[in-house]
Length: 301
Image (cartoon, rainbow, N blue to C red; front, side, top):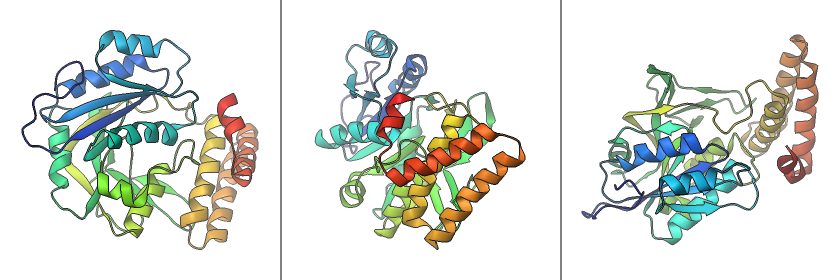
């Protein structure tokens, strides 16, 4: 890779396009792209999608990498929509694999090579990475992904090597997609503004017969939350509630029980803590899900 983000001379390796989503986070994005420019995989291109930033992100990133591929979304419609904008462009340009990467990640130079090694099995459609904390590299944040309980929507990350099963998902902070899988299963569901879109696509891929895998030797460093609402915020409560209900409406078993337990558990936790703004946010999230059109909420927040 050259520092401008364009591919070096090809050596017959399958083409990979890395899609990085930026939203008001140019400092993290520039650091991320710098780590991508050092990758030892020859046929790698970088595409930055600016998700309608309200700061000078586009100018800053272009100044740092004048030749890098960039797309600008007219509106911030969420992580899934921004990712799909980049993925569609990558596929249209002939990429055989799409590497979706959060902008607050630093990737060691051998990351692409190790992800691609897992794709040697033609039945694997999605490969996850081992994520470690940027401020504590010795600690695992997520070993590829995690597991989700289908009867209440409770999700947890794997913090050590684990067997992937029917409840497993891969976190899309750093994940490699096979082109054929995306063409068969489809891209991320843009009905999710943020959260649960990764679980949804993983479940859909598995239902279509594709396998999930983790590149166990990877170790990407994740700052976490660079473009997300603050943890324990009312906005986050609202987003996660709407996304969780959307996921359980499709994949919950049994659906009515799963959705009921999901909402009740979220309400109870906040009520016990006296977090009544959180209780209200959960109810608003239920309303967002019921309408199945939260665009007004998304753009106004």
